[in-house]
Length: 143
Image (tube, rainbow, N blue to C red; front, side):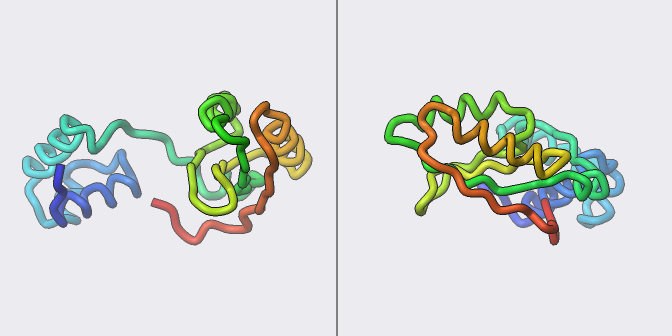
């Protein structure tokens, strides 16, 4: 589905707050509520919007130790490694990337010690060759 500029802006607003009222979104877009509602329904029907999620409060997230964990995987092991990583609730996201690493996981745990344990658990997964981590100091923005 090809999106127009209004649809892209609508998606941006929903990324900021998926619980925003249709009326508020309509005002911000300069559209009628009916138009906004029909565009949201179309985006859902076409699979562009596949679901809604919870965003954790910035203050709570700042209390967590968060890191990008770069992972190198042995050849033909990516599928099984990804399945093992999916089972770890401390991981918020997993990205397949180009470059010297194959995957980047985003982890969040209460303490530095917990991050150490998490990275050790990831390194122990069959098919993981090595890992490297970078602690996230702050998030400037997220959509």
